[in-house]
Length: 483
Image 1 (cartoon, helix red, strand yellow):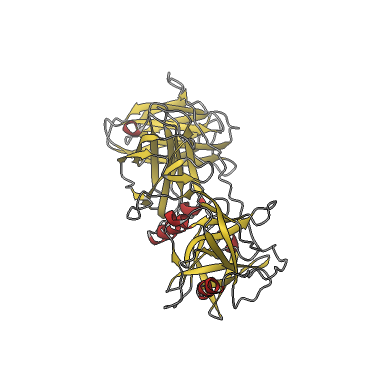
Image 2 (tube, rainbow, N blue to C red):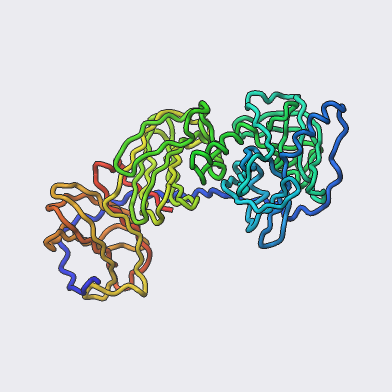
């Protein structure tokens, strides 16, 4: 509790210099597309082919499964394909989005499946399901991404709405086009609602893509997620990288032996990276992106700073629950993207370090450190008055050392009155601050300090964001991004 005390006559104190606090409000919109509404029964899609080819392709049927997704607003159906004998299934994200229960029909049996990896229909429309206690199930292999060519023959397998879940339909077509950055294969085999999530295979029964949608105004122009993206999505799951891949980032690596993400330590460190056209891509605008992860406990704080002399810098911090919790960007070279955040969950956090545009590239530095203090607070009806004139305040403790130079950065809905007391209770800093500003000062002793954030007037109310940083970690322009 902060005790009431008389506010002394303010000493001469330089007002905190205003800084350009940048609160990036870029929306990473993820509109989930559901097939639950697609209930018009389809017709049989089996096309005639040469007898030998048809017999060969039918060998793939056993690995194709029917999926029923039960959600709050009803049920929908789709297709999937088994890629591992233990029951790992690839399908579309939009087939199982929002489902409370997923039932897979495999070899005539209904089995409840767990969603173990989830992309997004507006990014990478893939999901992975795992069947429990399975082994020796029939599978289809993933083709090499380089094996897909225009005009090659392909077959799409799946369960159109209204068909029996016992045997998939098979339709024949050709590859019209391949869009590598977006990971999309365009083909002309006719498919209907319900085919989504089913495999598109070549003459060697290898998966070249996963059917996801058709063009609304063009007959027999359909799209599949390329097998190259399927491979990376599966590998990301096996590497333990969950939320960013498929929801924020379309992954890419130079070779199959590389990790999709790089671990970094929450302790102070520096990483040098190089964004190139062949890197992973940010879903919103296809900017080249590198992926980093770190482990943290709830209550810890982190500061991330990205700078480049060759490209604009952009940072996104994704929490263990898959939500973007902080982001910042600089549109030009030689300017920093800076994120300071107090972490509210324990687990794996993901950092997306990216260029500020699709055609930008270049080397960059990424610094990570732990701030001395990061707090978001509020002066409201629940706040006790602590000045003699009735003004409200809140207090926070932080630890420092003698001779340490720190920067106190504030972003507030009101003009705050700030006081910093040293371990002996003596005032180190005091005065009225700008709503968005910063001040640097030196700590006189080792020990615990006390920061008091109050209003200048009794009626001051609103939210504030305070951080105290070691100036060794701070760029020249004091900007903090907090979403």
